[in-house]
Image 1 (tube, rainbow, N blue to C red):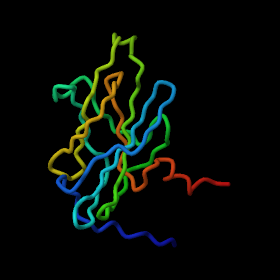
Image 2 (cartoon, one colour):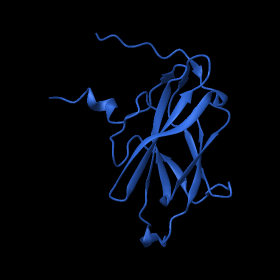
Image 3 (cartoon, rainbow, N blue to C red):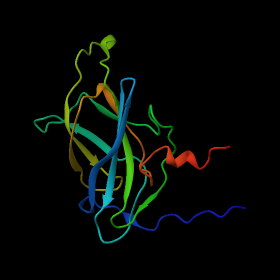
Image 4 (spheres, one colour):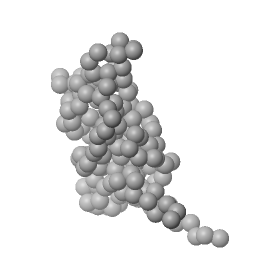
Length: 164
């Protein structure tokens, strides 16, 4: 019987101890993905599990109501996996992806895509959001949000399990 690692012991991460930053991305075939990091600037470890809540704001700071954030374990660039608890030690981070299309959905009447200027993120279990300037144009009325993970590259999660 294989040993099971104990669950992370940190309390839920408080928004005031988290910093949000862009730490990578990719593009191809009309799809875009930005990797975002939630870094623990607090004095002790904390834990996040699941999907962050994401909303987008326009240049006036108003909510882009026509774009919803959908939870998706994977995206065009990486196969995902189910959410698991992630312990974030001080000065360390947990990562998630924000993915979208840049091709207008003309079959649904979309000829231009809305312009987001800020992404607002609430960590699972946190009471308030963190805002980060991030200009992009999500088409199709949706962005996809991955679950938080302990590694920056989504592909690194499954690399160790590849047969060969």
